[in-house]
Image 1 (cartoon, chains in turn purple, orange):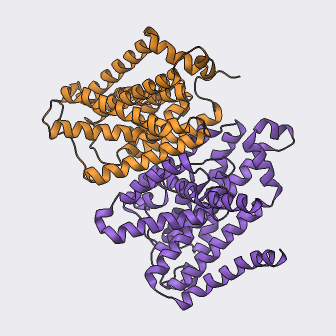
Image 2 (tube, rainbow over the protein chains, first blue to last red; image 1 turned 90 degrees about the vertical axis):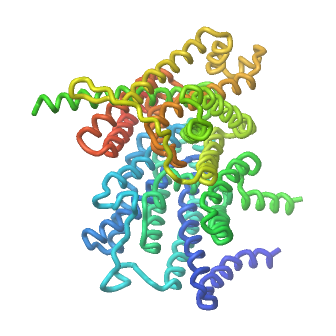
Image 3 (cartoon, each protein chain N blue to C red; image 1 turned 90 degrees about the horizontal axis):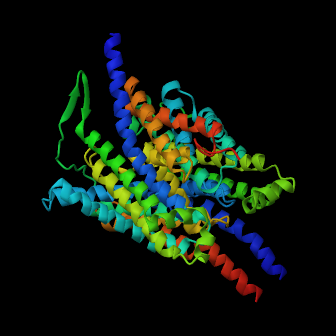
Length: 325
Length: 290
């Protein structure tokens, strides 16, 4: 009994050490690139699941991601502000946006369908603003942060895949830490109570509006950070890759497939979706355009009908129930 | 100078009115589905996109005339609506409401990429160019006028169906109380299927009208889908009159905003208006305060 507990405690450290050591042992740039993308998107999906697991289904996270990416890039290109300053500013913008949209929603008890549709409007707004201000943002053609001529560190631009891998790994681990921090806090119980029954939770002394706002802002800040990271790594952003309804739905999809109620669910979702897209792209080339989303769409419907806890969630539930017997 | 400005203003206002008719038709279909089945079809605009492709192929490949192709398209999309309910919504009727919304989100992905795979990403149009109507210095396209009239006619037909037929009465009753109606011996499953087909049919009608104004491509749904959801929420989900009023309000804002700047800024203005209205009237424009 005691040995299995210590083993369980050791597993994250062993896996962590292996992940850190990986790029020094195996340095294939293409595989590292895929890993970096998986880590960055895992972080983004984790940030969505922060509020998604409490029944706050937002379709506006594409908007937060767009703000994170575009504010950082615009400040760098037009004002020469380093991402070290630009990213915090972008986070403040995303947080303010989250407050402006979420406060009336929660104050006036807009939940469920309504909340999803209002946040859907948010991703629409951000996409339209980016397209409409094409003189600055390049519109739907996309936008590239200009290459630095000075310090790579100050510009947060690295040509080296290993550096990016370690940064993405750190960001991803940070996301998981925040997930566990919320999971072990009192807020988790308050939010679970709210998702079951708002009136009962309020009667029990839970400040419903404040608790929901708190988790929404945390989730929005993380998503914006993911957007900024994606921008700094890819060095190219377009309204379709970092904002809009498609990205919001992609987040929902990955989390639902992986498992919405478990910490590693979004990561499993990211691995599955990115491997699927890459596999189809490598296997079928340009003929595969559209096929990955076709499979996503069918999978999303099938999962919601037959496996609403997601792959990892269902797996863990099965292991737990069999070990109890 | 002032005179010209006024004419442009009037032209924009009338164009806004014409746009409002089509938007009201879109909102009606979504409201019908939500009011009766309590489900939001996120993929509503994608059903319209498939309908637009239907029109394109019927007219361009099979050489049908526009007026012969339109009823076929309406039937096609009505069938799609039926299948959507049968395959996706029905297994989820007892699940959390948000799961139904997400499942239709999956259908959105599916339809978009299906169109990409099957029809390619080229922009296609019917090749029908309707003349432009000139009144004084103002110009209105016939396609918009036709869309406006047909949308209004479609809405009147739905209104008559809902108030004058036995089936319509049953649908209205079920939207008021789901449980009791089943106890009264009403086949709710059949009513849901009829409603889904009707909602799909409205999407098909919208497809026939929009194909005159827009080029078809797999992502065309995104250019009017989000705005439809805003209208429906602003009017109050399931509130037919509210959706109607909100559609014309939005159309005027887009049209007038587009007059002073780009069309996108018209959309941005409309979105901003939406968020402000959510502060003031969170349950919809015409909601009674409870």
